[in-house]
Length: 240
Image (cartoon, rainbow, N blue to C red; front, side):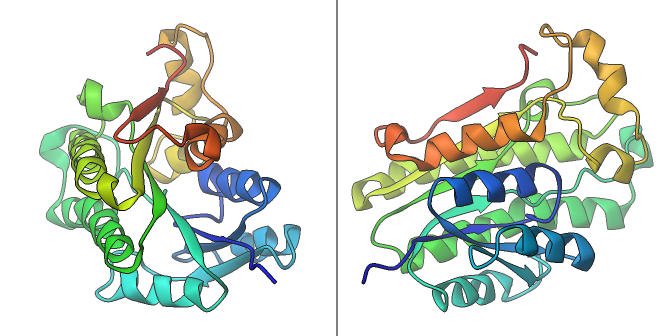
């Protein structure tokens, strides 16, 4: 009997990550999703999709995390895809106020962890698909807010394009989705809970995005409908 393919989703307990889990379960996948410290929210996601979504508490930036995450997923079935969604902005504010600790964490979660997880996939797979979550900040730079975060997302775009070319001959597709401002709790965690509403006036479509809209872009890139798409950075920004 053929096993249900597994997708790894990092940071899947809330916001865009939770919406991605829901879309992928709908599309016939089972999901192993990680979270760093949101046990109650993770349990709620797993309970919403019994038998199809399983939570794993893990710091994606910790040494050995990539191998441990893949081991846990492979124990459930064949791993078909990886979604690198986990990310941190650091506290919003001028670049000169960025602390070393904040910088270390932003780089570790947004770039080093993503790179290690992609490397783990490349080492283990004969075929598969990766979607990395980037940001419109990679293009705008986010001056006065989170320049270092923007820099890590620009690096993710470069990683995505380079890996797509290197891994394409092996049948591994690598793409990215770059959201604009999305109405999730990430803004509150960065110290500005009303940021999405404030930014809305600058968005041509006149509103921030919804987590489900970003998740649908990720789901499409993982589907057979996108079988000839690799190396793409798909913007979902409302026109920013």
